[in-house]
Amino acid sequence: MDIFSEYFFQRALIGGVLIGLTAPLMGVFLVLRRLSMIGDTLAHVSIAGVALGFLINVYPIGIGLVFALLASFAIERLRKAYKTYAELSIAIIMSGGIALATLLFTLGKGFNINVMSYFFGSIYTLDSFDLWVVFGVTVLVVAVIALNYKELFLMFFDEDAAGVSGLPLRFYNIVITMLTALVISVSIKIVGALLVSSLLTIPVACSLLVARSFRHSLFWAVLFSEAAVVTGLFAAGVWDLAPGATIVLVLIGLLIVSMFAKRGLRL
Image 1: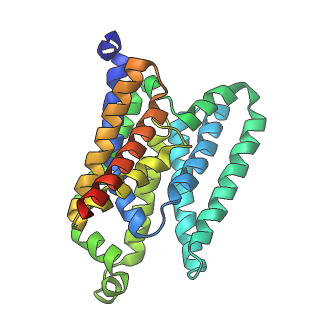
Image 2 (image 1 turned 135 degrees about the horizontal axis):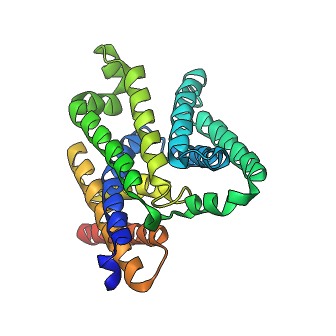
């Protein structure tokens, strides 16, 4: 139990709680837009940025963040070009991100081990600067959603009515995509690029089973996420498990329990 008094575990817990707040908040909007897979896309693009950061010896998460933001603009651009096939933009950017990451891996064979840690997460290696970056993104996400709650609610439930009412849909779409890029880029060091989309989608899937309104879905998504993060980290600390994977498995467990609970209530 001594691990809980270690600074690295305390930093991991703080970082996990912050991401446990922001990821499901963004996930609710992504699920409503039917863009659940955007998490995987931006995560792979972020990995390409992380690889470049190691290659040029610049803060990897920072470069990954820039790559994710650029990818978010590209996705919105392609969504406008292929209005009928909006999901095509995600497939195109994901392919490009994977290709670029692979190319950078071949150029920097010496740092591939460091980059691979971002695929599976390395939450125990968070330092103070990483926490400040995560905290800054958290504050930004919460502030934007709080200040634009009514506009976002209208846009995601009836986009046509929002457009007729004069709401700048393009602006809000770009804002949501950019915030998602920020959340994903700072999350890959915590849960890893291969698992980051689970924090965006599984808590939302749980919340949709129990929530009765949009506001409730936000609350329950965050609650499920935080419960999984805290439980997963403590379980990983006690039994020496992979933290990111443990968090995701706890989320899946919560989803299964929620599904059976709802089915039981119907019976």
